[in-house]
Image (cartoon, rainbow, N blue to C red):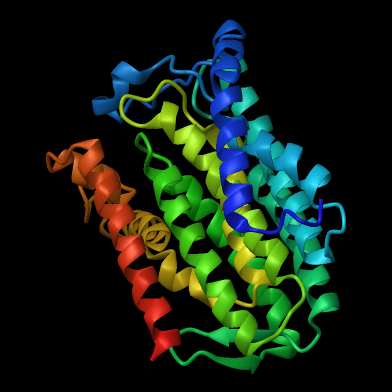
Length: 328
């Protein structure tokens, strides 16, 4: 198994597994009537009501299948990313299950979600400190290493919760969260090779491979999620992807790069915060037609494919610029 070290191998293998299992998963979801209820105020999506959700299993299964078989000599960092993301996937599955059973879009209560997320984030932040007590992180654009020490665990804690929820908010139209996450992971794979030259760490190869597996799984998923979607990833998938984005970046010493390469995830979260805050302060006025921002664009007449193209392109362009800073 040690011969299989190329991220390209893992990407292709995961793409194959996801593409083959996706039709089976969709059939199962339809038979158990795991249909997504569309929020009443998202009028432009009312025709999608009943589309199977929990399709995140399409890219989760390749990770579960490939990591234990091909990556047995795993580093602690890889295992933390693996199990933390499965923990978030379980939390999302629980949320999706409640929505399906109740035939509404409420799911878990807000405090239940945040408690579950906080517990996982707390464990990861403690483990990060044990593996990296100096709190070393690479600073974007300057590409130098800073040591955050005891400030690192709280930053990791916040980063995990913020990232998972930001990816979840970005999951609002066909192919959006999947496309942006794929672009993010593609850039991260490239950056890990540069960062490992600045800050040598033994986990670099396996974290690149894990990112490639998740990326390959996303490609298989997007074959059935692009407009018009045959399946949605649900919170099962979006929380899993958010955790993968966060933990892979964190244990690659690139936590701060999430704010840069994940600019479209940040946009989703920031527009919601601005909208809610302004609404409360002005007692009913709005800044955007609807949030997250991709729904504002929809109300402006943008088609879903155009929005996905915009978000993905911006992610790749920003990521490409970050890559160039390592070459200058």
